[in-house]
Amino acid sequence: MAAVTNSRAWDDLDTREQTNVDGFVELSTGFKLPSVTASGGRGRLFVRWTDQRARMRDDNFGLRDDRDSSTLLSGITLSVF
Image (tube, rainbow, N blue to C red):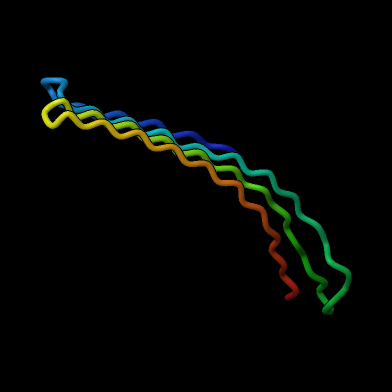
C-alpha cells in the first residue's frame, strides 16, 4: 500500500506560500499461528516508511521555514480468537 498527498496554498499578491508533501509506503504479510485455540490464530507483520515535508515562505515578515521528517516503523499484530 502506498499514498502521496501534495498541497500548495498562496495569496493573491504572492507574498506568502506554503507547500506540504506527505507520503508513505507499507509492506505487510499475514500468517497463521499454530492452533492456540479451536479456531486457530492469525498474525500480520508490517514495515511502514513515512515521509513528510513542509515549506513556508512569508515575504511580509521575511520568514522561511523548511521541515523534513522521515519515520520507519515495524511491528506485528496477533489475533488468537
